[in-house]
Figure 1: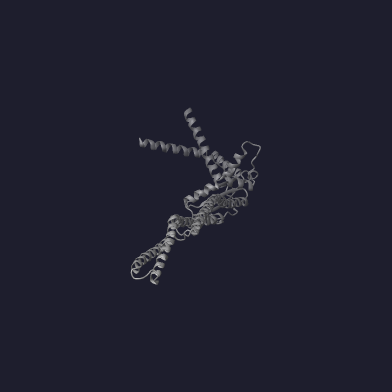
Figure 2 (figure 1 turned 120 degrees about the vertical axis):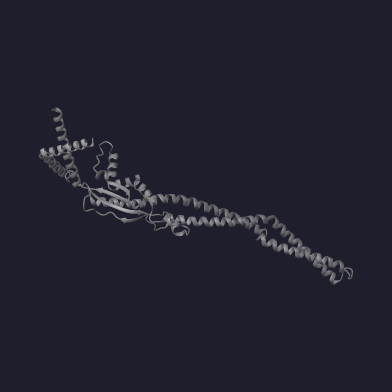
Length: 369
Protein backbone atom coordinates (compact mmCIF):
# COMPACT_ATOMS: atom_id res chain seq x y z
CA UNK A 1 0.00 0.00 0.00
CA UNK A 2 2.79 2.40 0.98
CA UNK A 3 4.77 1.35 -2.07
CA UNK A 4 1.83 2.24 -4.27
CA UNK A 5 1.42 5.64 -2.60
CA UNK A 6 5.12 6.43 -3.17
CA UNK A 7 4.84 5.40 -6.80
CA UNK A 8 1.77 7.65 -7.22
CA UNK A 9 3.57 10.62 -5.66
CA UNK A 10 6.60 9.99 -7.86
CA UNK A 11 4.45 9.85 -10.99
CA UNK A 12 2.64 13.07 -10.04
CA UNK A 13 5.88 14.94 -9.38
CA UNK A 14 7.29 13.61 -12.63
CA UNK A 15 4.21 14.73 -14.53
CA UNK A 16 4.52 18.22 -13.00
CA UNK A 17 8.15 18.37 -14.05
CA UNK A 18 7.19 17.25 -17.55
CA UNK A 19 4.51 19.95 -17.69
CA UNK A 20 7.03 22.57 -16.60
CA UNK A 21 9.35 21.51 -19.42
CA UNK A 22 6.49 21.58 -21.89
CA UNK A 23 4.98 24.91 -20.82
CA UNK A 24 8.09 26.73 -19.65
CA UNK A 25 7.81 29.49 -22.22
CA UNK A 26 4.22 30.54 -21.38
CA UNK A 27 5.00 30.26 -17.64
CA UNK A 28 8.15 32.33 -18.07
CA UNK A 29 6.30 34.98 -20.06
CA UNK A 30 3.46 35.08 -17.50
CA UNK A 31 5.92 35.35 -14.59
CA UNK A 32 7.94 38.09 -16.28
CA UNK A 33 4.82 40.05 -17.21
CA UNK A 34 3.56 39.76 -13.62
CA UNK A 35 6.92 40.84 -12.20
CA UNK A 36 7.16 43.78 -14.59
CA UNK A 37 3.57 44.82 -13.87
CA UNK A 38 4.16 44.62 -10.10
CA UNK A 39 7.31 46.66 -10.49
CA UNK A 40 5.50 49.33 -12.49
CA UNK A 41 2.27 49.50 -10.49
CA UNK A 42 4.10 49.55 -7.16
CA UNK A 43 6.03 52.62 -8.25
CA UNK A 44 5.48 56.11 -6.79
CA UNK A 45 3.26 57.13 -9.69
CA UNK A 46 0.61 54.57 -8.68
CA UNK A 47 1.31 54.10 -4.94
CA UNK A 48 2.47 57.18 -3.08
CA UNK A 49 5.42 56.27 -0.82
CA UNK A 50 5.09 56.86 2.90
CA UNK A 51 7.77 57.55 5.47
CA UNK A 52 7.74 56.24 9.03
CA UNK A 53 8.76 58.23 12.11
CA UNK A 54 8.76 56.64 15.56
CA UNK A 55 8.90 57.72 19.18
CA UNK A 56 9.91 55.27 21.93
CA UNK A 57 9.47 56.11 25.61
CA UNK A 58 9.00 54.61 29.04
CA UNK A 59 6.14 55.88 31.21
CA UNK A 60 7.10 57.10 34.67
CA UNK A 61 6.39 54.78 37.59
CA UNK A 62 5.03 57.45 39.94
CA UNK A 63 2.24 59.97 39.53
CA UNK A 64 2.51 61.79 42.87
CA UNK A 65 5.64 63.92 43.07
CA UNK A 66 4.98 64.94 46.69
CA UNK A 67 4.61 61.33 47.77
CA UNK A 68 7.74 60.23 45.95
CA UNK A 69 9.86 63.10 47.29
CA UNK A 70 8.39 64.12 50.65
CA UNK A 71 7.03 60.86 52.01
CA UNK A 72 9.82 58.91 53.75
CA UNK A 73 7.67 55.78 53.84
CA UNK A 74 7.19 55.67 50.06
CA UNK A 75 8.13 52.36 48.43
CA UNK A 76 10.55 51.73 45.55
CA UNK A 77 7.77 51.72 42.96
CA UNK A 78 7.09 55.37 43.90
CA UNK A 79 10.66 56.40 43.11
CA UNK A 80 10.60 59.49 40.94
CA UNK A 81 13.35 58.00 38.75
CA UNK A 82 11.76 54.55 38.34
CA UNK A 83 10.50 53.38 34.94
CA UNK A 84 6.88 52.30 34.73
CA UNK A 85 5.85 48.67 34.48
CA UNK A 86 3.03 46.98 32.55
CA UNK A 87 0.25 48.91 34.27
CA UNK A 88 1.74 52.31 33.43
CA UNK A 89 2.37 51.23 29.83
CA UNK A 90 -1.27 50.19 29.44
CA UNK A 91 -2.42 53.50 30.92
CA UNK A 92 -0.22 55.40 28.45
CA UNK A 93 -1.67 53.41 25.54
CA UNK A 94 -5.21 54.14 26.73
CA UNK A 95 -4.52 57.87 26.80
CA UNK A 96 -2.79 57.78 23.40
CA UNK A 97 -5.89 56.16 21.90
CA UNK A 98 -8.20 58.76 23.44
CA UNK A 99 -10.59 60.76 21.27
CA UNK A 100 -9.21 64.05 22.57
CA UNK A 101 -5.66 63.44 21.30
CA UNK A 102 -7.01 62.19 17.97
CA UNK A 103 -9.22 65.28 17.51
CA UNK A 104 -6.38 67.66 18.38
CA UNK A 105 -4.04 66.04 15.85
CA UNK A 106 -6.76 66.02 13.17
CA UNK A 107 -7.44 69.71 13.77
CA UNK A 108 -3.82 70.88 14.10
CA UNK A 109 -2.68 69.13 10.90
CA UNK A 110 -5.95 69.46 8.98
CA UNK A 111 -5.86 65.73 8.28
CA UNK A 112 -9.19 65.84 6.47
CA UNK A 113 -7.54 67.79 3.65
CA UNK A 114 -4.16 66.12 4.12
CA UNK A 115 -5.64 62.65 3.63
CA UNK A 116 -7.83 63.96 0.78
CA UNK A 117 -11.10 62.93 2.42
CA UNK A 118 -14.01 64.00 0.19
CA UNK A 119 -16.58 65.58 2.49
CA UNK A 120 -19.31 65.21 -0.11
CA UNK A 121 -19.10 61.42 -0.08
CA UNK A 122 -20.77 59.12 2.42
CA UNK A 123 -19.30 58.66 5.92
CA UNK A 124 -16.38 61.13 5.64
CA UNK A 125 -15.70 61.07 9.39
CA UNK A 126 -15.50 57.28 9.47
CA UNK A 127 -13.09 57.23 6.53
CA UNK A 128 -10.97 59.91 8.24
CA UNK A 129 -10.76 57.85 11.44
CA UNK A 130 -9.85 54.73 9.46
CA UNK A 131 -7.08 56.62 7.66
CA UNK A 132 -5.86 57.94 11.02
CA UNK A 133 -5.78 54.41 12.48
CA UNK A 134 -3.94 53.06 9.45
CA UNK A 135 -1.24 55.74 9.57
CA UNK A 136 -0.87 56.36 13.33
CA UNK A 137 -0.39 53.35 15.59
CA UNK A 138 0.59 52.80 19.22
CA UNK A 139 2.10 49.62 20.61
CA UNK A 140 3.96 48.24 23.60
CA UNK A 141 7.41 46.79 23.08
CA UNK A 142 8.78 43.63 24.67
CA UNK A 143 10.76 45.82 27.10
CA UNK A 144 7.54 47.49 28.42
CA UNK A 145 8.28 50.75 26.63
CA UNK A 146 5.64 52.36 24.39
CA UNK A 147 6.14 53.05 20.67
CA UNK A 148 4.37 55.67 18.54
CA UNK A 149 4.58 55.04 14.77
CA UNK A 150 3.40 57.57 12.19
CA UNK A 151 3.28 56.96 8.42
CA UNK A 152 2.94 59.88 6.05
CA UNK A 153 3.86 60.91 2.52
CA UNK A 154 5.73 63.87 4.00
CA UNK A 155 8.58 62.74 6.32
CA UNK A 156 8.59 66.11 8.12
CA UNK A 157 4.88 65.83 8.95
CA UNK A 158 5.31 62.24 10.11
CA UNK A 159 8.05 63.25 12.58
CA UNK A 160 6.13 66.31 13.73
CA UNK A 161 2.92 64.35 14.40
CA UNK A 162 4.79 61.68 16.38
CA UNK A 163 6.53 64.25 18.59
CA UNK A 164 3.32 66.24 19.08
CA UNK A 165 1.43 63.13 20.18
CA UNK A 166 4.13 62.49 22.80
CA UNK A 167 3.73 66.06 24.08
CA UNK A 168 -0.05 65.67 24.12
CA UNK A 169 0.32 62.53 26.24
CA UNK A 170 2.06 64.57 28.95
CA UNK A 171 -0.53 67.34 28.62
CA UNK A 172 -3.47 64.95 28.79
CA UNK A 173 -2.15 63.03 31.78
CA UNK A 174 -1.38 66.25 33.65
CA UNK A 175 -4.85 67.57 32.83
CA UNK A 176 -6.57 64.40 34.08
CA UNK A 177 -4.52 64.35 37.29
CA UNK A 178 -4.94 68.06 37.99
CA UNK A 179 -8.71 67.84 37.61
CA UNK A 180 -8.76 65.14 40.30
CA UNK A 181 -6.16 66.86 42.48
CA UNK A 182 -8.07 70.15 42.32
CA UNK A 183 -11.23 68.44 43.57
CA UNK A 184 -9.29 66.66 46.32
CA UNK A 185 -7.54 69.91 47.29
CA UNK A 186 -10.90 71.68 47.59
CA UNK A 187 -12.19 68.92 49.88
CA UNK A 188 -9.07 69.07 52.09
CA UNK A 189 -9.12 72.89 52.23
CA UNK A 190 -12.79 72.85 53.28
CA UNK A 191 -12.00 70.27 55.96
CA UNK A 192 -9.05 72.41 57.11
CA UNK A 193 -11.23 75.51 57.41
CA UNK A 194 -13.94 73.58 59.28
CA UNK A 195 -11.32 72.20 61.67
CA UNK A 196 -9.93 75.70 62.26
CA UNK A 197 -13.43 76.97 63.05
CA UNK A 198 -14.03 74.08 65.47
CA UNK A 199 -10.69 74.75 67.21
CA UNK A 200 -11.46 78.47 67.48
CA UNK A 201 -14.84 77.70 69.06
CA UNK A 202 -13.22 75.48 71.69
CA UNK A 203 -10.52 78.06 72.37
CA UNK A 204 -13.21 80.69 72.91
CA UNK A 205 -14.91 78.34 75.38
CA UNK A 206 -11.59 77.86 77.22
CA UNK A 207 -11.16 81.64 77.35
CA UNK A 208 -14.51 81.93 79.10
CA UNK A 209 -13.50 79.22 81.57
CA UNK A 210 -10.24 81.07 82.28
CA UNK A 211 -12.30 84.17 83.06
CA UNK A 212 -13.97 82.04 85.77
CA UNK A 213 -10.53 81.22 87.17
CA UNK A 214 -10.12 77.76 85.63
CA UNK A 215 -6.66 77.91 84.10
CA UNK A 216 -5.18 74.47 84.60
CA UNK A 217 -7.57 72.04 86.27
CA UNK A 218 -5.00 69.42 87.20
CA UNK A 219 -2.42 71.75 88.78
CA UNK A 220 -4.97 74.09 90.30
CA UNK A 221 -6.95 71.30 91.94
CA UNK A 222 -3.75 69.77 93.35
CA UNK A 223 -2.40 73.08 94.71
CA UNK A 224 -5.71 74.28 96.12
CA UNK A 225 -6.42 70.95 97.73
CA UNK A 226 -3.02 71.06 99.45
CA UNK A 227 -3.66 74.64 100.54
CA UNK A 228 -7.10 73.70 101.89
CA UNK A 229 -5.58 70.76 103.79
CA UNK A 230 -2.99 73.07 105.40
CA UNK A 231 -5.64 75.67 106.31
CA UNK A 232 -7.86 72.94 107.74
CA UNK A 233 -4.96 71.58 109.79
CA UNK A 234 -4.10 75.07 111.08
CA UNK A 235 -7.72 75.70 111.99
CA UNK A 236 -8.04 72.47 114.00
CA UNK A 237 -4.67 72.91 115.73
CA UNK A 238 -5.44 76.48 116.75
CA UNK A 239 -8.91 75.49 118.00
CA UNK A 240 -7.35 72.82 120.19
CA UNK A 241 -4.66 75.21 121.43
CA UNK A 242 -7.27 77.90 122.24
CA UNK A 243 -9.28 75.59 124.46
CA UNK A 244 -6.17 74.85 126.49
CA UNK A 245 -4.97 78.48 126.63
CA UNK A 246 -8.31 79.64 128.05
CA UNK A 247 -7.58 77.60 131.16
CA UNK A 248 -4.46 79.66 131.90
CA UNK A 249 -5.06 83.12 130.41
CA UNK A 250 -7.71 85.79 130.30
CA UNK A 251 -9.62 86.60 127.11
CA UNK A 252 -7.66 89.80 126.79
CA UNK A 253 -4.34 88.02 126.82
CA UNK A 254 -2.23 88.49 123.70
CA UNK A 255 -1.72 84.75 123.27
CA UNK A 256 -5.45 84.09 123.17
CA UNK A 257 -6.07 87.07 120.87
CA UNK A 258 -3.41 85.85 118.44
CA UNK A 259 -4.77 82.31 118.52
CA UNK A 260 -8.27 83.57 117.71
CA UNK A 261 -6.86 85.63 114.86
CA UNK A 262 -5.11 82.58 113.41
CA UNK A 263 -8.35 80.58 113.71
CA UNK A 264 -10.28 83.28 111.84
CA UNK A 265 -7.57 83.50 109.19
CA UNK A 266 -7.57 79.74 108.66
CA UNK A 267 -11.37 79.73 108.51
CA UNK A 268 -11.39 82.55 105.98
CA UNK A 269 -8.73 80.80 103.94
CA UNK A 270 -10.78 77.57 104.00
CA UNK A 271 -13.90 79.37 102.81
CA UNK A 272 -12.00 81.04 99.96
CA UNK A 273 -10.36 77.79 98.91
CA UNK A 274 -13.68 75.98 99.11
CA UNK A 275 -15.16 78.51 96.68
CA UNK A 276 -12.24 77.93 94.32
CA UNK A 277 -12.59 74.15 94.60
CA UNK A 278 -16.35 74.39 94.02
CA UNK A 279 -15.68 76.47 90.92
CA UNK A 280 -13.19 73.88 89.73
CA UNK A 281 -15.72 71.15 90.36
CA UNK A 282 -18.28 73.06 88.27
CA UNK A 283 -16.06 73.94 85.30
CA UNK A 284 -13.09 71.58 85.59
CA UNK A 285 -14.67 68.69 83.70
CA UNK A 286 -15.46 70.94 80.74
CA UNK A 287 -11.94 72.36 80.84
CA UNK A 288 -10.31 68.91 80.78
CA UNK A 289 -12.59 67.72 77.99
CA UNK A 290 -11.97 70.83 75.88
CA UNK A 291 -8.20 70.59 76.31
CA UNK A 292 -8.15 66.93 75.29
CA UNK A 293 -10.32 67.63 72.25
CA UNK A 294 -8.15 70.58 71.30
CA UNK A 295 -5.02 68.44 71.48
CA UNK A 296 -6.52 65.87 69.11
CA UNK A 297 -7.96 68.45 66.75
CA UNK A 298 -4.67 70.35 66.54
CA UNK A 299 -2.98 67.11 65.46
CA UNK A 300 -5.70 66.56 62.85
CA UNK A 301 -5.29 70.17 61.71
CA UNK A 302 -1.56 69.60 61.29
CA UNK A 303 -2.19 66.47 59.20
CA UNK A 304 -4.72 68.34 57.05
CA UNK A 305 -2.23 71.16 56.55
CA UNK A 306 0.44 68.68 55.49
CA UNK A 307 -1.94 66.94 53.07
CA UNK A 308 -3.02 70.31 51.67
CA UNK A 309 0.61 71.29 51.02
CA UNK A 310 1.30 67.97 49.26
CA UNK A 311 -1.75 68.37 47.04
CA UNK A 312 -0.67 71.90 46.15
CA UNK A 313 2.73 70.55 45.10
CA UNK A 314 1.08 67.87 42.93
CA UNK A 315 -1.33 70.44 41.46
CA UNK A 316 1.52 72.73 40.40
CA UNK A 317 3.97 70.07 39.18
CA UNK A 318 5.34 70.31 35.65
CA UNK A 319 7.41 67.16 35.71
CA UNK A 320 7.29 64.98 32.57
CA UNK A 321 5.41 61.69 32.80
CA UNK A 322 7.71 59.93 30.34
CA UNK A 323 11.33 58.90 29.90
CA UNK A 324 12.05 59.46 26.20
CA UNK A 325 14.28 56.86 24.57
CA UNK A 326 14.00 58.07 20.95
CA UNK A 327 12.35 61.17 19.55
CA UNK A 328 10.90 61.10 16.07
CA UNK A 329 13.16 62.28 13.25
CA UNK A 330 12.55 62.74 9.53
CA UNK A 331 13.09 59.46 7.73
CA UNK A 332 15.27 59.45 4.64
CA UNK A 333 14.01 56.09 3.40
CA UNK A 334 10.41 55.23 2.60
CA UNK A 335 8.72 52.55 4.70
CA UNK A 336 5.74 51.88 2.40
CA UNK A 337 5.26 50.26 -0.02
CA UNK A 338 7.90 47.52 0.09
CA UNK A 339 8.34 47.09 -3.67
CA UNK A 340 10.56 43.99 -3.60
CA UNK A 341 8.00 42.18 -1.46
CA UNK A 342 5.14 43.19 -3.76
CA UNK A 343 7.09 42.05 -6.82
CA UNK A 344 8.07 38.76 -5.16
CA UNK A 345 4.53 37.92 -4.00
CA UNK A 346 3.01 38.94 -7.35
CA UNK A 347 5.57 36.89 -9.30
CA UNK A 348 5.08 33.77 -7.19
CA UNK A 349 1.32 34.18 -7.31
CA UNK A 350 1.33 34.50 -11.12
CA UNK A 351 3.60 31.46 -11.50
CA UNK A 352 1.47 29.31 -9.18
CA UNK A 353 -1.73 30.51 -10.86
CA UNK A 354 -0.38 29.70 -14.33
CA UNK A 355 0.82 26.28 -13.16
CA UNK A 356 -2.57 25.56 -11.59
CA UNK A 357 -4.36 26.47 -14.82
CA UNK A 358 -2.05 24.16 -16.82
CA UNK A 359 -2.59 21.28 -14.38
CA UNK A 360 -6.36 21.71 -14.52
CA UNK A 361 -6.28 21.87 -18.33
CA UNK A 362 -4.18 18.69 -18.58
CA UNK A 363 -6.45 16.88 -16.13
CA UNK A 364 -9.51 17.82 -18.15
CA UNK A 365 -7.83 16.44 -21.29
CA UNK A 366 -7.11 13.13 -19.51
CA UNK A 367 -10.72 12.82 -18.43
CA UNK A 368 -11.94 13.51 -21.99
CA UNK A 369 -9.83 10.63 -23.33
